[in-house]
Image (cartoon, rainbow, N blue to C red; front, top):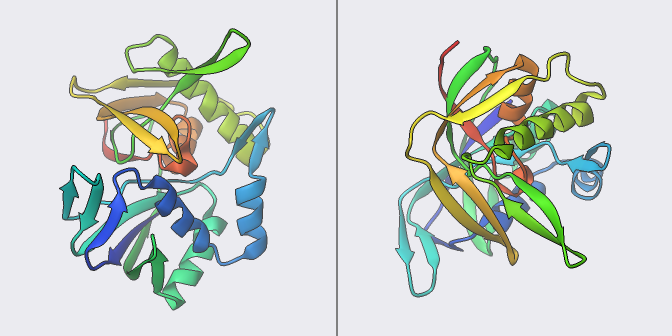
Length: 246
């Protein structure tokens, strides 16, 4: 399930890399201290992987950008999408923001103005557009140090890294392997854009654009709800359906 949340703001100023402020607001919205602590500190586990099982889009709205200060100022209303396969997580958030509508974001007031929700029923294939970048990487050992190599959709490993990540997410959330482990992702046009984000000093490379995704309905659904690729709870991997193609 996913929520579409609209916030009223009055010249809200944020650093251009604002993901962690947005993430903190989401955690603050969880109307259950036990679940908030579980999600933040423990998460859902499969083998050595841990997942928070949610993702979110960038903020959308009218803004001005100051290239000297690298600050974005949203002038009026902003909106974003929050998605998770865990309906309970989203219900906690709805319970809180329905009754307490005013919050602080980077020490500035914001007000929840509207909430809508939708559920996703996958076909075997669809075209999607990123609302936050998709990131995929491999870890390499070099001189006894672990280094991260980010992958592009042109890399052979890109599809397999995302597919195996989806399988681990499915196992972590449902406690079993998916019946069908097939999954394919490929660009649907040639206008992909690489992004470089700074999350609390940690550099993350990702890709924005349109993709075809196809394969197991189970993996399509977990990817659509929990995010494609890595770093989902940091605000990566949320996609929006454009159309079915199978």
